[in-house]
Every structure is written in structure tokens, then in C-alpha cells.
Length: 495
Ligand SMILES: [Zn+2]
Image (cartoon, rainbow, N blue to C red; front, side):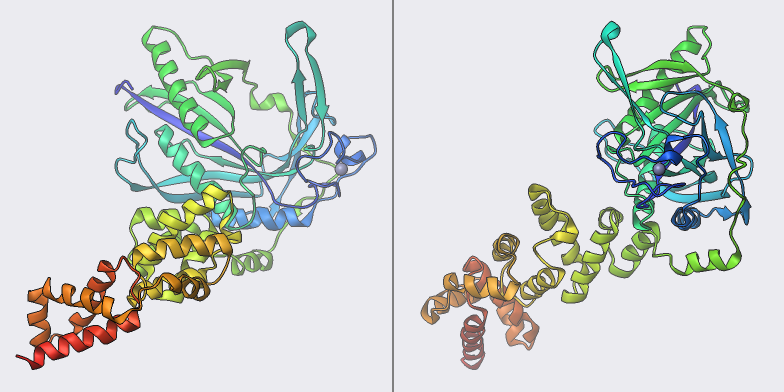
């Protein structure tokens, strides 16, 4: 990128609130139904039908607002946003305009530029301001089929009236990666507090980005272009990068950036113009006459506050300070609330947080990914994994053997004791054989032997470990203990 220029990005994120029914009627919000199956006179916009606000929408929007440090207004107003579009049956969308549900929020999150291969260069914390979060209904969906002159268009109104929170940021982002990290954070947070399922393919979370460039040091913003419907994290990041380069090239060539809406084309890896941007007044906002002002009191807000779970960023910080985990490990483990809970339960079961983190991140997650299973449905319970780590720490099984144990637990769903007992058939319990291995282990470590003789009896575990290693993790720990004790005692007596 040309260093003369500075990038300015603002994000508008639409998050579908996780309700069973729509915002102003009782129709289902379930995804994937027959086109137009989930509709009624209200969401079809038939004359005379009246909206009634779904209370659950207010609960969820309130929770999201608190998680993003927004002030919830005691009174907010629903407004009509007028525009004509085939998938908008009423000819307007019920949204909020000059008196939104909540305002003046912020998040402070780790963010980093990435190198060519996508690796973070240096993480640092940055604060991004959030202008507002307001409540609105979604529009329907137009589907186009066929090519040019034979194109047919259809309208599906199942989405019409699905509740959304629109989260508008200040233009605080200075790179595509900052936008990327913010979007990731928002998705994780909304999932944590159970407000939005975050499913971008199904459209539960959508992002529009306002992108402009200006000469470094300039105060005035450049002309901004809106990138619409960026429905994956990669698209968001790539589309912004492309758009920044395009705008700089335009200016450098003596041209002017035009204010417009552009779409990202993934196949061609470029953006193209969709329509010139309407000014805000084109929407002719006015208060919705069929809905009273939305009033919430301090008691309601206090109630929401008391029900708020620990947020991912706080949780990540706690994992680092309480368990001594690395930033990366803590970040991965707090990616999903269920995963964080699984990690803490495993740690409680074994008392070894670092081992728990390693086994979950390196082994268990791989198995889950290979079999397409979610952590909540893991065939290996946290108690079993914790039990297994305990056996390793006690020297009862080797790390190598534990890998097989884990895979067997995963395959069979059996608890750790049972798997280890069944694997006992292959365990080496023959005293003569173990005697040979133990003598070998002692002979190979004369320095430790001397220290042991000198009274450093804590080295006993070290020798157990050596024998385990020589046996490929198959030695019966009880027999090893007996044999070793005999050898070490006798050698100190014979001295
Ligand atoms: Zn309906």
C-alpha cells in the first residue's frame, strides 16, 4: 500500500437476534423452510395488519448493548425507513433512526497486522468506538435464476420480519485486519451471550464496510464507498484491501472516488459498482405510528446486567493470569464458550492446566474436526480427559500410550479407567523383563543415581519415567515401582 495514504473504515454489522418468532408477529424464524412458508399478514405487509413487539428481542438487544458498553436509552422510537424494493412488501422497513435503542459504546480488543502468510506480526490492544446499536426488522430475499434475457426473479419473505440488531461503529479502523479482528470479536461475543448464532453462511451475521482513504495527516475524510454483504471474514478483509488499492490508484491517476455501493466478487477477487448511494434523507424516515415508544427502566437493565456471563476477552485474560497460558492458547480456548468450559472442567479434574490446554488444542480438537463433531458432543468427557492427564502425571501411562488411549476413548466413548484397563493386556507386567529394563535405566544414569543415594529421593519418579520410556509406555507402573525400589535400595546398601 502507498504509505502516503491513510485508510478509514467504519463497519455496520447486522446480527440476527436468536428468537423463535419474528420481531412483530408470531411467525417462525427457522432457517431453510419452503419459500414463503413462514409468513402471515403482518410480515407480508397486508393492509390493516398491526405489529406487536416481541419482548425477547428487547432482552437480547439489551444483552448485546451491555456487552459492547453501550448506554441503553430509557426511551427509543421505531421509525419507518421508506424505500421501494421487491422483497420489501410494506414499502418501508421498521427500524430506528434518531432515537435508537442504545448509543456510545466501545470495545477494546487485541488486533494485529498479518504478514503474507496470514500470521499475526504483533498483537496490541486498541479501542474501537461503537456509535449505536438499534433494533430493526429484516427484509425478504430476492432470488434470481437464469441468464440475462431469460432471467426469472422470485421473492421469498421468510426473512421478512426477522429481528436484527444493527451495530454501527465509528470510522475507527485503519486497516482491513483491524476490521477483521473486530468482526471476529463481535461474533464471538454475541455467541457467548447467546444473542446471535453467528452463522454467516445463513446470513445471521452480515457486514457492510464503509471504506475511504485520505492523505496521511489530513483531517477531512475522503469520499467513502460502501461494500455490501461481506458474508465471510476473508471476504471482508480481502474486499477492503482491494477497495483501498483501487481508491488510491484512482486518486493517483488524477481521478475522483465516486460515492457508491460496491459488491465483492470472490471469483474475480474484485469489487464492482452496484448502485450510487442514496443519501439518508432519501429514506424519508418518520416515527412508526403503529408502535408506541420502547421504554426500558433501570430495573430491567440491572436484571440484564446480573445475568451477564463472563465475556470472552475477560475470560482470555483470566486464563492467562490464572493458568499461565500463552496469549495464543488462551485465545483459542476462549473461541467458544463451550470450549472454555470444557477446558476449565478438564483442568479441575487433573489439576494441570497447561497439559489440559495442550491435549485439547493439539489432540482433541483434531479428532473433533476430523469427525465433524462439536465440543459439546465430544465423546471424551472432560472428566475422562482430566483422568487421563492425571495418569500421565502420576507416571502410570506414558504420553505416547495416552495418545492411543485418547483415540480409543474417542472411538468407543468409554471412560478412561475402562480403556486403560482393557489396554492392560498389552501392559508389561513380567517382573523379570522389567528388572532388566530397570537395571538398564539405573546404569544409564549414574549421576542421578549418585544424587538419589545422597538423599535426593524425589528422583525416584525420574527413574520410573526412564523405565516407562524404555518399555514404550507399556510397563505396569506398580511392578516398576517395586522392582526399582529394590534396585535403588540395594545399591545404596551395597555402598
Ligand atoms: Zn408473520
